[in-house]
Length: 427
Image (cartoon, rainbow, N blue to C red; front, top):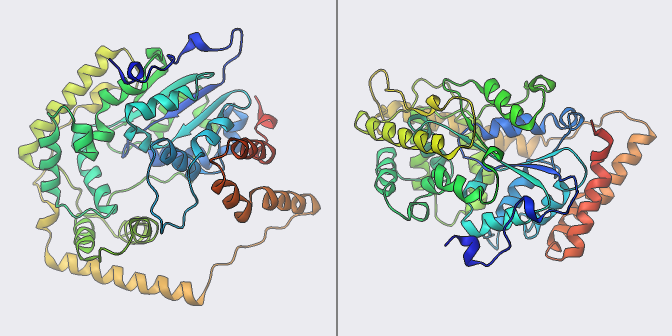
């Protein structure tokens, strides 16, 4: 019995659409994390207007709206001290925006892969009137595992690399590995695809392989082919690849997390410490070595890759790319782990970070950032006033706090259509 049967829900799919209706096409990019998702999302949001001219609409105002909707559908808990607005009702608002107009709407958040079956079912049922396409980007295990460990460290993790890897491998054969391990929650690819593809035709489930050796432009070409647009219609200059940390920087950050007082809340760490240390300062330092798998773990990674490739071939999904790209290649050169880094390199990383943090503090206190006012006439002034009234910080917070009410969610959808005007750019 599936989760859908247990909940006694009406099956989602083509058969329950309104007869003779022209369904809205909605592409749900559900992950996986560390598979070029940040690059793809940056490409989409920095080219919103040319994409709309191609018939592709991004609901919401920015990529954070998709993340907030993902938190809502996943029923993520919000700490009482968290200054962020409530995200209750955000999924319904985003879906309401996606279902308005014509063409293709894209929703992209890699943590949608963490949904459990009832949550995925609710997400799909909210799109019952649309032609739904599931998009999942996937990467070979040998490069995915180090990237995920680094991400865990960027999110306040303290477990050393090889201990973290052992835990992932130990949980691999378990029937409940999604519950036992965050890695398997978001990277149990075949199980996640099965969960999200209930009553969706296999050719509407698109698995995009991540090209090896860092070829982000090719990843975008593959993603654009699923959307059915010309990949050259947008400018990729502003899209940033989410680069990894060097080995000394990653080990320094892990030890920093161990020393950090426990009363520092997670939301503060994510929005300030992670942003400043992991995403700005440490990542900007010259990287000399790339973290790889220990030699005694390469065979396991290759085996997992082969299991995944065989499963994808049997599933008959739409494969965009080359499944052989998912087969982990043997490492070249000698192996060195984060714990093997010379103490002087860790000390230098700490000194550089301390100096940069003091510089940030100085700039914040003595040189506050001022927004430059761009020139414009009365028409632009009226447009800015309308935006401030309908979507200014006070209005936005008040509406979000009341979005548990259906009428408020509907009002937010109407406001979005007034401000964004998706119908003006129909192809």
